[in-house]
Length: 348
Image 1: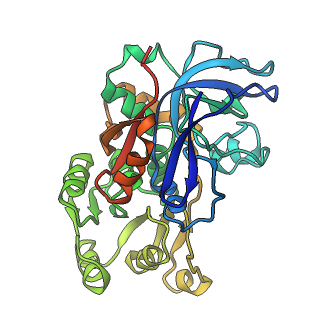
Image 2: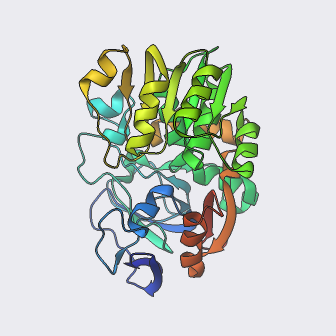
């Protein structure tokens, strides 16, 4: 089968590799229909994260058809259409029961990778896989895009809003205009925020943010940008959704949150410097981490997508085949695409 391979910094390749097999009782093998490139995949691509040359691709989002299941799997069967969350919770530990399956305490190997491939082995599939009614061929390409966001970015944006306790009538600032930031805007709107301030410098991303529910946009950066965001939020937001992961973004979040409010952080952290004093003196709360993908999909997001209430698939602004994986990464690296969509196989 074909799989993308991380060849070296800024170099992806396609190789023929062995088909995945059932290795443990709670495994499933999935035929991938659609995959994509995530903003976090760009960290190793750019050489910021250390990754071994000629190693498995960092892709972790997919929708597909169940091909095989291990003997412990009773919730899905071969032929089922499923969303493959990047988190593989057990659904039973205290973390999962509390709605934090992204931090499952039962499984140590509960994150996906290698999903930019024709087939994948999905570990701990019993609870984590999310079944979609019907077959991929029952859905438009736009709906398949919506469903694919439920493997990560829509659930991650929702997580930012949830842990920041966004409530009806709130003013929310979203830091980051990539796919996660865009989905955080959708989530804030779902939760009833009255004013949602996006922070994009790019006209196309500003326009998409407005479609998703942003009421304002501040394009300026540094001190000028902070001043304008504070002015737009009447002195500080009721929630700041930090969807970047850099120290600069996090330090800005601390300055933009009103006293007594929350920062929801879901950008994968890189060199962030967090001190107790920085949150203490403004009475600010801080929460966030890997998203509760399966929990949110089963509770609200899949239903909202199927009913047409949200269309997060609009974050996919370019389409590629698996053979064109290098260009899919480069388009995002150059900010020519918000998120690259990969057609892996026919929608049967």
